[in-house]
Length: 466
Ligand code: HEM
Image (cartoon, rainbow, N blue to C red; front, top):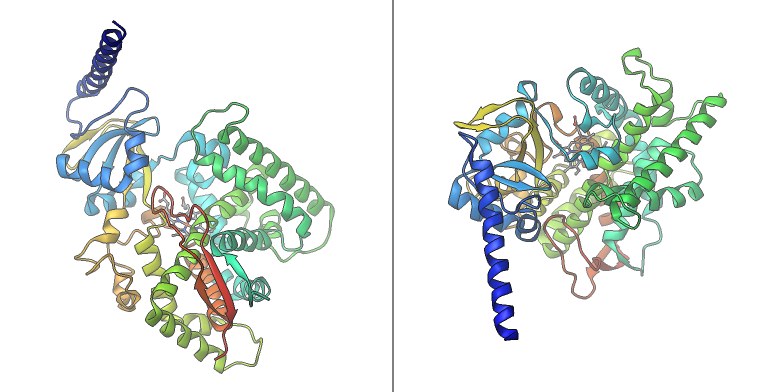
């Protein structure tokens, strides 16, 4: 009898599941002209398949439905584009109603005036203000010497230590931006700031359930405390007549009236700088260390490039702009690292009106996932795509080919691209000229949805004697 009940319940459960799936398909198929694809479960959609099997799920769907297909993930009906030409079109045409589509839950934590939350004229103004802080001239004249100083002291006394390079580059990426923003902040302030910022970061990529105990809730609390700290610093700055040499000073005393930001905008701008350059720079630095360790020939060539620069200098002399510009193999290593590790899998957009893309109708308000990951492994663009081959990037045309979206494209092209490349380059400069290293134990690295070493990436460090 008990067995019969179990069988009946199981059959019923199965039928309900099938009915729910079918109902969801019928609901969306009522609309004419949508791309092919499946919508999964009501509300949940195909989020679990996407998060669990990301790249293989995408390839499976593309094989069935083509390179533009519909799905439902992260709470929204979404169209995935794996078509390089269409991806380019989408990124280049924000003006035609293809605006950033990052989840509202993420934007609520990053702030209403965050660059990804604003479009049109407001975006132009916020982006202009950002470029006045991290644009090419500022990098060359002001940020390079600061980054050099930071790296020399950050990398001091590593000889003989075993470190988790994931944790270390994570610390490095946040601290370096923090110091560019508030130059003379005491380290005790940073000690309070970092854990709160980490909560904020985790909150932006968590399930948006705002209840005590959830990561999302912690994210909001992190934001609240960060905002409070920044407001206090801004008050102190306004009460002082000292001309600080940092980004906050420039934000509070903008030379160009176009870029006079409100307090709310200044706070969101600071959060943007810290957030955007955090995981990107730390993961790229960690993976560069990993790939260089595994590819001694590349390490040898990279080290030669940096020893050549050091040879021309007195001990302890800083790296200058011309030295940085001569680091062509280093730049190639960073591009190859970003390509092979795929630090950014794709970019989210949404439609502001119904529109036709590749012959299909995309309804107003739907998300478009511009999935750029697969382009990084295209064998026509990158022969033997799974091989770490930095030499391929010595052909400068590769960086600027039409489908290189490592730093995005169009009006949202990463404004921190050169700053990010510089930070990783200067880190590598001091790291490879001061030390050698070997991996300790077996360090697993997950590639999706984020590149991370769940138990850390441990390396033993010793002095490098040329
Ligand atoms: C290796 C390092 C980096 C990588 C791979 C990277 C990648 C990207 C990508 C792919 C986008 C496009 C996002 C989109 O279109 O939706 C982007 C945008 C952005 N990045 Fe970076 N980034 C890096 C470093 C940085 C740094 C150091 C900053 C410092 C501020 C930064 C600030 C930004 C900002 C503010 C945006 C948004 C631009 C806009 O909406 O107009 N990034 N980045």
